[in-house]
Length: 117
Length: 109
Image (cartoon, rainbow over all chains, first blue to last red; front, top):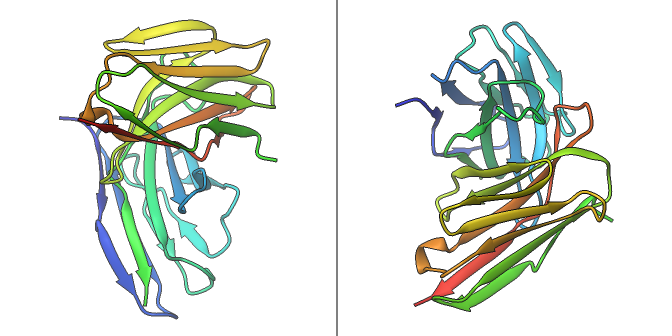
């Protein structure tokens, strides 16, 4: 079955460490996104990618980095520069960049919960 | 003020009740999404609307573009409907979504 796989589901990090969250999709979607979710707040866009080898910053990109070397993969690195990294991270993909397309569907992974110790 | 406001923030109801969750927005949009997030965290897309009304099973979503308002209705609610329901709008000619904070729904048996 097609879908998005995020790993790990739970991750603990010591302060000062970089960690990388994996996101893999087999939906043949062009666009991929990383969101951060904090309690009581709407999702906030970290980075997105419309095409392989290209990505753009979202609203809260500081302290994060991404790569898009393959269409299927969009890993997110939470660097030590991120001041408050404890959060729930969601990866998503869509089959069209424009999310107003009638044919578009936004598909999410199950999420990764990062806790800084 | 957030550009996308959902109400209520929390809703508890008895099984079988008719549920309404509201979403108001203050920007021009090309589409509005309703999504469901279960306690485990995964999010599922329910509807995408640009006008009128859509129905899927016991779920009905409506949108009034002039009033900048959308509602999600659940008929004959069931405990398995318990989840967070999230509204997100797609700003005109933009691929980014603006997200509401979600409505936490609990259906008691």
